[in-house]
Amino acid sequence: MDSENAKLLVVDDDPEIRELTQAYLTRQGFEVDCVDCGEAMDAFLDENTTDLIILDLMLPGEHGLSLARRLKREGNIPIIIVSAQGDEIDRIVGLEVGADDYLPKPFNPRELLARVRAVLRRSRKSSSADVTDEGTVSRFGSFVLDLSSHQLSRSGTLIPLTSGEFDLLAILVQYPNKVLDRDRILDLLTGAERSPFDRSIDVRVTRLRGKIEPDASAPVFIRTIWGKGYMFCPEGDGKS
Picture 1 (tube, rainbow, N blue to C red):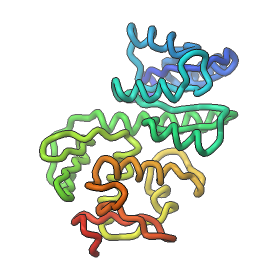
Picture 2 (picture 1 turned 135 degrees about the vertical axis):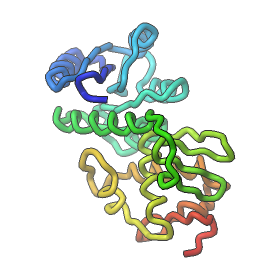
Picture 3 (picture 1 turned 180 degrees about the vertical axis):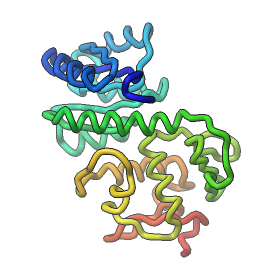
Picture 4 (picture 1 turned 90 degrees about the horizontal axis):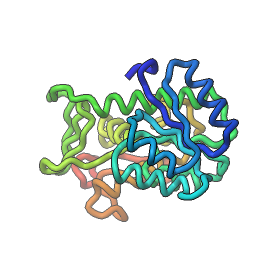
């Protein structure tokens, strides 16, 4: 998915931000549409498709977090939340409802561009339908992680993952029984640079545990090594 054919939808009630964001991203080769609220977003999506949504939180009518949760429940359009609510709690909640990234306002347009390209790159990989090669398949417990098709399944049933969750799991399975601290994980993740204090790794780990652990409160696959980081145990017994 090259930027020249990628379609973006900006959902923001600030006309100046809509205009500036649309102008900048259009110059970068994207096709950009804008709406000012969730109702207008729904009307647009009823008639059009989009490859990524840039979503503000503080909107008239339905709140942005509610919109993000509903969008992820109904489909898997990538979402980047942008909001003046830069508090870490809002950031964590945004990621917990399934957003693929979060950028606090005010933001540098170049950083938004980098985030957009990174999320689209991950989305393109996850939607590919390449023929599975055994070298791209990892197994742990009753799960099968297919890196070529970007799918996680258990006993033949697909487990839905966001692009960020899949990328994190793909990294963890490549380092079985090895402790990875947050800085190392951030280095291994592709895309825009992150602060070493970025807690999105912890949020993704929590979400992954909810999907793969028999008991998320006592994880056996993704273990926390206190003061050091995380360790992936493919056998599910915590033994190295």
